[in-house]
Image (cartoon, rainbow, N blue to C red):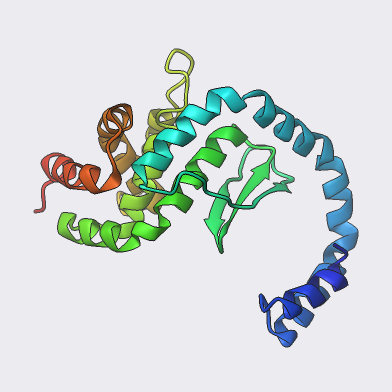
Length: 226
């Protein structure tokens, strides 16, 4: 919808307070002269991603079914997905937040990002279990949560004969002398440790409830507390 109408709709539906909607509309109206050309330029890429997802539906469905079962989610899960224009062809990402998924385009692999964020969305109801497991392992819930999602994608979505993006990314962070306390370093380290476990769990139809104690035990074995 046009910006002002979208702002009024947000107030009517309770998504934003009137003052919040007015502030959002003011910012977006000021940015519109810059945003609209970007959106027009990105439109072919956004259309191409939708076409790619449609073509790959049969390949993606079994993967989605496995992660849905892993997350103990209902048979049908509906979530709005927003493909958004990104002026940077190298850096970008996505998020699962507010009951919706966002994927920036272009990106290195929009399908892989969509799967990554989809797993985050499906794991959201298990925040308490993830937090308790992270506490028992002496790590943050973010590190554990992101580690599981990265273990799936790109960890299990890459073609191993072409590139192991998960390992490559971890090496690049370390080559840049990134600290072990860096959030991205931690997420990739956790993902590398959990990837074999996640691969086996998805293949066996295991759920997160059964997976989590194994994940904690594996991390303790690899990185014992000092």
